[in-house]
Image 1 (cartoon, one colour):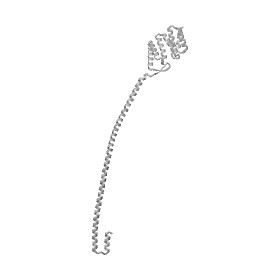
Image 2 (cartoon, one colour):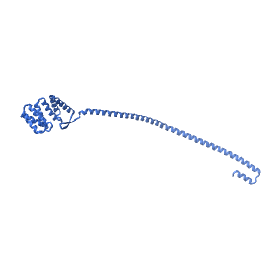
Image 3 (cartoon, one colour):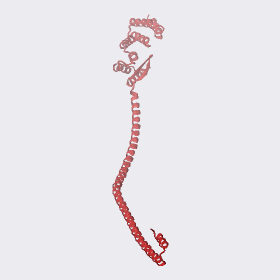
Image 4 (cartoon, one colour):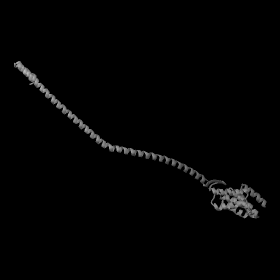
Length: 270
């Protein structure tokens, strides 16, 4: 039963004023005691709560410090690893930079080498070009000759044009020995006969012209060779052989200037 209800019960039962006062005094005393008791309990509860809070804070602070220490321990190696990694990256960057520089230098060297090679190739081509076979057209024929082969032929022909028949005959004979398969062979034989005739070596001229005609009777200068052979025979006073050569010329090459000249020579021989 609560105190207010007890107080009302005493009043309803008819107790006297003193009893009521005594009850009221007791009630006040009890209330004060209860209040004092409640304050102590509350104070204890508060103190206990504060202690718990303090303990919790201390525990949390300790945990935080432990975690911080653990983090520091874990971050230390990680930080060192990061520093090592940064160092390695710097080294790699330096190596990449060096390699880039080396590649650029290699590219420049390669370009310079290619330029020099092209220059050398062009220089070599220019030196080899005079040594390459050359195309020649002569007496209705086209053939390839070596540069030296052409040089010697042109030199021998120069001697013919200058009237140096002895040197020309030597040069032509040397050409035949050195280049027996040359495309110039027929022309060389023809002009060798003329050089021999020019230096009055008629017998050799006759032999040369005969070999020339026999070797290439369809040559454009075959008729001229027969006429020159007949002239050589006339110079040797061999008119019989000369008339035979002139007859052969007229029969084999009618209508040519040489055939017309042969007819005139035959008339003068009779």
